[in-house]
Structures are given as structure tokens and as C-alpha cells.
Length: 560
View 1 (tube, helix red, strand yellow):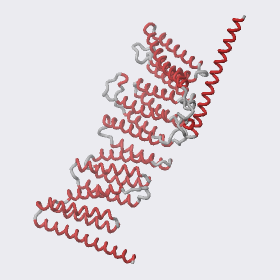
View 2: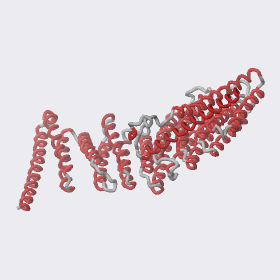
View 3: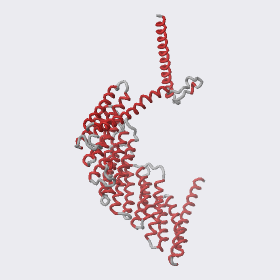
View 4: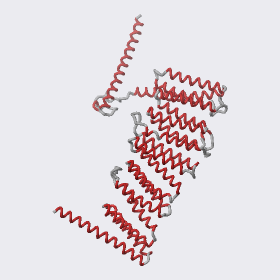
């Protein structure tokens, strides 16, 4: 009995020691939580508490190593184990096909999937994350086993592709249903990725392309209802990738790359994708997603649409794309107007307006070809500036300025001069500079950079246009007239910038006169050029000298 009592006492002491250690561990964890909360409130680093620097106990890491180990075991190994289980059952299904008939092997696969579903359901309360991972793996396995009823096997279990496609679609619908019910964005992403994969596996125009459209629409619907912006952005990118693969004749199914799948439905579907994702700016912002999703979606949608559309045009419509881009331009223009009154954001309507004018530029190019289309593009710049005034958009003005300067430089560098085009640049630069100066308050322009850019473009295009428009013996006279025009504009508008443009034109004219005309002109034209330039220079000098002296005298009189 004494030996038995001693054993009982030892067991009780061991139990008490474990209870004591457990209490100490709980106290340490509670202390760590309190320190962490105090650190967040006081905005101090969460790792250490400097006010207790002298206390070695308080200098411990706030995150217990045991908690890290717990996270690794609970989450990391759950992911790894589920992945291994996924491949294991997939290999089991393939192994069963080698020794059993097709239907029996599929039954084995479905039975294994049912077992994974049951295990996930059984662990749903005690091991939440592991249960979620098992369910996720079971959904993927269910899709894989169903896919192998017809696709990627030599002897299909179900020889009718339509029946298997219907079963795959049912599996995806079930997965999306559980994703919505469980509020799982990851499960929904996988469901929509499998939907796009099914569209490619189907390899049939009237099944694949509508399924891609349906996937795009459902992603926007989930974004609107749940705020799942990551899902929507991933689906947006994958939709255009799927369309690109389809246009390459769907090499996923073993078709030769490069034998383009020509079908008018391709263009309609591409327009449908662009329209569906263009609905995002109309969705009211809530706390479910950040405001930056609007410009991100618009930019990604616009760039992806442009790349795939370029591929479609080059492949299928190289000679008849004018009407396509005209239609896109009209639709984007009306949509930009709608967004202007529908939302209070500036970027959204501005982007669609810019995209509309870019599409219009492509249509103009297709209608007139270069270089004759350039004069229409130059005049189109005035329309864009007017539109920017209506929208009060600096973005439109900035983009239009960049495009205008780019087109002008490209034309002057690579195309033979055409008088109509040359003076179109002159008129556009002058009118645009005047409009921007007139309505800069409406555009909330705080700098003169854009207007100065147009004035520089006016200065260069004027010299270029007159040089090619008049005979060589009259170039100096024409440039001198341009200087007179700038002097007159400086007087009328009381703007010193035109005066500087006049002075620079006179300097250019003098340089040209001494180094080019001096040896090429006949004596009579040379005398006329020298006298005319001298008269203009001296007259301007006398006028502005007199004006400056008069101003100085007035200021002196006021001071006295």
C-alpha cells in the first residue's frame, strides 16, 4: 500500500507541475497580448517595449515561437497535405484505369472524392482551416475526375462530349454556389478559372466563347455583390488571355498554332468583354473594395482590349477596320458622357473620352492614309481640347498635347511635306494655345507648361510650313511676316510670349539670310530681304524702346 500511495503522490505532483506550467504559459500569452495592444495604441514598435528596456522579461519577442510553430502546423501543413492528397487521388484514379474498366475507375475516383468531402465535413468544427482545404481539394478532384470522363483519355467513359461538358458546368456551378455561401473568394476564383479552362477544353465556337462571356459577367456580378475585386481583376486578365489562346486556334487542344480561328463571333465576344468590364465604374463604391480599383480596372481592361483587338484587326480585318474603330469611338464617347453625369470621379469619363479619340484617330488613318490623314488628326486635336473644356479634365489636355506633338514630330521627320498638313499644325497649335489660355481656370491648370508646348509647336510649325509653302527667294520675307504677326499678337493680347516668339523668328530669319540666302539669292531679292528684315527689326526696336521709356517715366512720376 505504501508503494501504491507513493505512486499516486508522484502522479499528483506531476499533474500539479503540468497545471502550474500551463498556468504560467497562459499568463505569458495574456501578457504578450496586453503588451501588443498597448504597443498599437501608443504607436510604438510591436516587437519591443522601450519603456521596459531594463526588464529582461519585457524584452522578449511578442510573438511566441510556439505560436509560429502552431501556424506552420495548422496552416502550412494543411496546404501541403491537401496538395499531396490532391495529386495522390489523381494518381489513384489513373492507376485504377490501368487495372479496371473506365466506369469502375471513375467510380473509384468519385468514391475517393466523396471521402475527402466527408472528411472535410467531419472536421468542420474542430479544424476549420484543414476542413476548408480538404473541401477545396475535393472540388478540384471532382472537376478532374469528371473531365477525365471524355477529355485527355484514349477511350472516353462517356463518348458524348456535350454530356461531359454539361457535367463540368454543373460541377463549376456547385463550386461557385458553395463559394458564395461560404463567402470564400479563393473558392470562387478557382471556380471561374475552371470555367475558362472548360471553355478552352470544349473547343467549339458556340460553346467556348459564350462561356467566356458568362464567366466575365459573373465575375463583375460577384464584385458588385461581394466586393471581390481580386477575383474580378484576375478574371479580367484571364478572360483576355483565353480569348487570345482561342484566336491562336486553341493550341491547348492540340490544334496547330497560327491557323487562326476566323469567325465573326470573335469580334462580337471581344466587344462584349470590353463592355462587361466597363460596367465597373458604374458600381457604387462601398467599404468592400478600395477606390483605386476603378482606374486599375479601366486601365487593364483598356490595354488588354487594345492588344487583342489589334490582333483581331491584323488577322481578320486588315482592309475593313474603319467601321470597327468608328463604332468603338462613338460608343466610348457616349459612355464617357454618361459617366460624367453618373459619377463624380474625373479619371473614368476622361479615360473613355481619350480612348474614343484614339479610336477615331485610327479610323481617320484608315480612311485617308498617311500623310493626308495627318491634317485631319491635327484638326481633331481642337475637338479634343474642346471636349476637355467641357469635362474640365487636365488628363485629356495632357494626353492630347503629347499625341499632337508626337504626330507633328513623326510627320516632319518621316513624311514629305504637304502644305495642307503643315498649316493644319499651325492653326491647331495657335488655336489650342489661345483656348487653353482663355479657359485655364476651367481646366484648373496651375502651370504654363501645356500652353508653352503649343506655342513652341506653333513657332516650329510656322517656320516649317512657310519654308515649304513659298518659293526659296521668299522664305526670308515670309518668316519676317511671321515675326510681324507675332509682334502684332503681343500688342493685341499684351502677352510677352508672342514678343519672344517674334524675336526668335527674327534671329532665325537673320541666320538663314546670312548663311543660306546670301549665296543663293539674286542681288535684287537679296537687297529686298535685307531691307525688309532691317526695317522690321529697327521698327520693333524703336517701338518697344519708346514704350519702355514711357512706362519708366510714368513710374518715376508716380514715385515723385
